[in-house]
Image 1 (cartoon, rainbow over the protein chains, first blue to last red):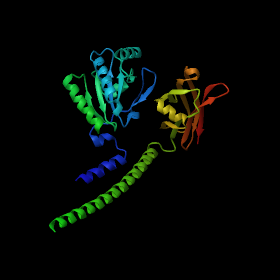
Image 2 (cartoon, rainbow over the protein chains, first blue to last red):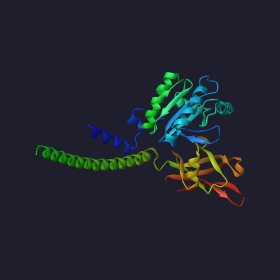
Image 3 (cartoon, chains in turn purple, yellow):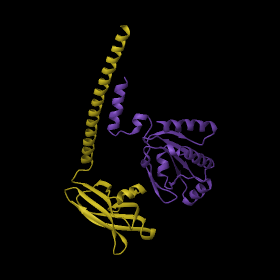
Image 4 (spheres, chains in turn cyan, yellow):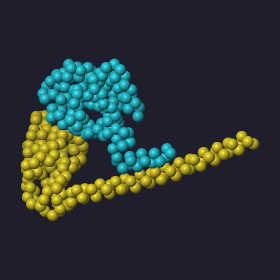
Amino acid sequence: MVAPQLVLAALLGAAGFSASAATGGPAAPDFALASTAGSNYRLSEYRGEVVALVFWASWCGDCRRELERFERLRRTYGSVGFTVLGVNLDAEPERAAALAGAAGIGYPVLLDAGKDVSRSYRADDLPLIVLIDRNGAIRARHSALDERDEGGLLVNLRDLIDE
Amino acid sequence: MKTASIILIAVLAATASAEDRSALDAEVQSLRREVVDLNRDLFMLEEDLLFPASTQVAVFVSMDVGTFFDVDSVQLKVDDKEVANYLYTEREQEALKRGGVQRLWLGNLKAGEHEVTAFFTGAGPHARDYKRGTTLQVEKGVGAKYVELRISDKASKLQPEFVVKVWE
């Protein structure tokens, strides 16, 4: 019974089907955004890494805690293929840069002033954390985390890193 | 005697299963190759159907040297309508500098004259913000039309140069 599944998986992979078909998660919409530092980033360039997208805005009370949490996680798991991309929804990029600087985050803060990316990820409530696996499929979505939720997030994250 | 028989059966079973696995591997590889070929043919067929040669227009971006310009984005307008707006990452800039050619847009235009305008933004000489536009009147005939937007260096003026070239 295992062999036909392997054959099917191999064929799907060969045909270039999206990872979502094999993993059960929808494919993460690709995007390119400029960062507060001026460089441009494209999500699809991080295929092969586990990516956390952190959607946030300066007016969102819980967002700062998540920015700091993901900076800690990046420092811990960055060397094993974990990347964090902050996606800021402020209309004024200066606010995003100021808050990111104050929170001491070292990952890129991408500017989505036009809200196109946040709309495609249905970021209705902030903060929103989207975990994307190494094949580019969305595997988990989290909103503001309490201690118990953080445990769940860590389990998800470690599983994705181990895959 | 009984133990020896069991060992013999185990060895034969292991050999048979290894052979089976190898045959299965070969079969999977062959199927994979066929699926890849089929996928390529389907892709080409889809492009032929969606963009028939009689209406097909493709716009490419290339860069020659690129000492005087780091491209940040290119906005493309056809007949005053925006059809592409592309942001370049560092990796993509490098790929262009190494000779890569990017297909910026593939679309359909009916026969006749069309205006293609491209706006390039980026960092020019001395890392200063730089924005330039270039316009070209394209005469679309019966065959596919290929337009190349080439960013090159004008060494005599120490400035970038934006050239539009039409390939038949």
